[in-house]
Length: 177
Image (cartoon, rainbow, N blue to C red; front, side, top):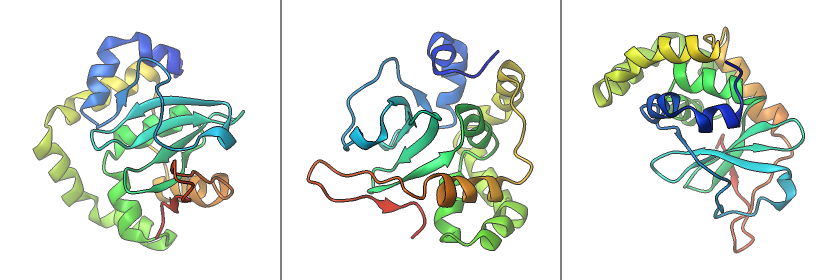
C-alpha cells in the first residue's frame, strides 16, 4: 500500500496500530495552536498524546514536528520516511534531545543506547513489537539504514529555514537545543 495521508486516514487497522507508537492519525485538518501560514500547503497528519503535532508541509510534503514544549522542526523528508522512523524508533524524540544536535552522539545512541529506550517502550506497550512487522508489510516500510544521519539531515538541512510561531508571535525553538 502506498503511504499517503488519505490511505492512513482510511485504514482503521493501521491507525489503531500506529496509536501504540504515540502517532494518532487525525481524521481531518484540525486547527493547530501555532501559526502555520508560512508553511503552506499544510496538513495535520497526527498528534501525540502530549499534544505534539505532525504535519505535512510545503510543496515537498516534508514532515514537520511541533512539540508541546515550543520546539519545531522538519523530522522527515516524506510521510513514508516519518513512519519508518516512528515504527523503528518510537522514542526518536528522546534521542534527539539527548544528543543535543551532535550527529556523532546521535549515532552512538542509536548504535549503543537504544536497548534501554526500546525496553521502556515495550514495557509501556508490548504490542509495539507485534505491530512493527505488520506495519512494515502493510506500507512497505523498511528500517532506516542510518537513522541518525537521516534525522539529523531532516532537522538541520531540510528544516533549516522552517520557523513556527506561537499565537503570541513567539518563535519556536529548534528541536536541537
